[in-house]
Image (cartoon, rainbow, N blue to C red):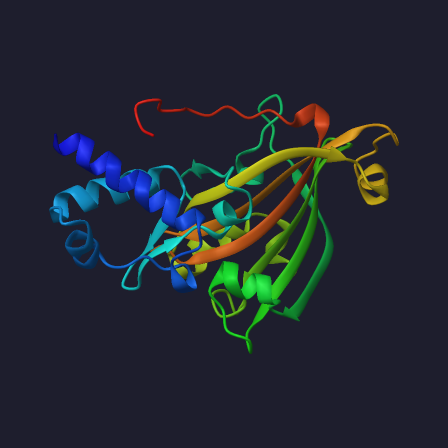
Amino acid sequence: MTELVYRTVMRDLKKRIRSGEFQQNKLPDERSLSDSYEVSRSTIKRAMGVLVDQGIVFKKRGSGTFINPLYLKDQSAFRYEGNNLGITDSFQVNGEQPHSKLLDYRVIPASPELQQDLFLDGAEFVYRIKRLRIFDDQPVIIETGYIPIKILPTLTPEAVQSSIFRYLQDTQGRSVNKSFLSIQAQPSNAEDQELLKLKVNEPVGVMEGIFFLDDGTPFEVSNMRLHYQYLKYGTFVNLNED
């Protein structure tokens, strides 16, 4: 009976999230939800835990539970978890990791969309970092990331030549251990064809994601355009949850 109740709560919360009911993308606290659904706190906790596992919401320590912006955009997000590693940091071909060529590094005002995704206000700035990931002589990934300056005020062009996440760990002792991603294929554009050495009729894989610090703070919004030959991703799907 308890299991049925938590599933009912979970499904209803999903419907309310999809309908845009919650202001500022923040869910009520567990006590308020417990009162409104007239169920125990443990039931709410279990329902919320499933939503977190499914990548629909995330918890920010000391601030509450928020709806994943990427889920709101296309509702096809899934979760990637690692040990302070980004997708491109984890990427390997024949046991080798890519090296980076820095294409662009600048400081820009956060756009309204970045303000929403990274929890910034209108006066804040972000780094815009664009890198080309290369295996041997083969360009594989065009990666464009946006990181709040307030989180990494000492980030330099030299530091972004390697792993930004490892730089964060080394300089601040903080880690990135979760991301929410969407994956799709698109026709390649002129830049893809030039940088990734694609033909005009060849597609490109697109991975978009938001990376989070271990306390739930959004750290980076990233767009990765992959050579289609390297677009391969495996994940685990738990069919026991709705």
